[in-house]
Image (cartoon, rainbow, N blue to C red; front, side, top):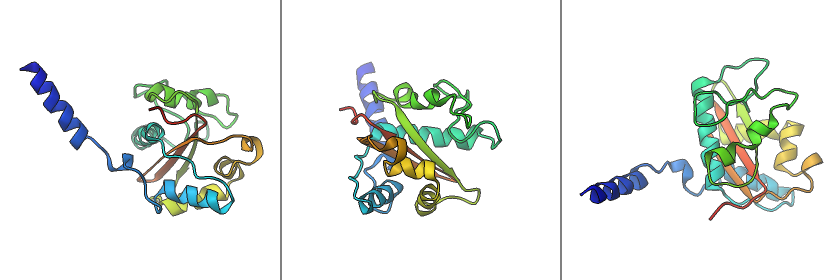
Length: 177
């Protein structure tokens, strides 16, 4: 009898627990727009990663619930209110490793992750987030493999957008099978 209940619960979780964001994104999604922008620059599309999407969704939920905009901890910071190591990510990048480790902490993704994040107090769209990143050298360099990212091949990308936040995670490792 216990086995039957377990199977019913698992099927329910699989059916009802799937978030729409984990469905393969469309061309007009944040994921699609970033790949379209990359292709306009002669770069290849970055494969979709469920793992990195989970990290992006988790971080947005953490930002919405616990992040307070201040001059010390930027959008790459993580609260102490989750199943992860908290960190205050500062502009000197002293806590960069804390951010890079999030995919390994939260999923079966084996590599480091590199995040770009955007905030717009009146709500954000995929188009607006991409425009903000294109107009920021540091963020644009990650998206378009420039500067210190020139010799990096992105093999995975996960995205999430919700409320006032947009988050993208890039990785050098393929999505785990």
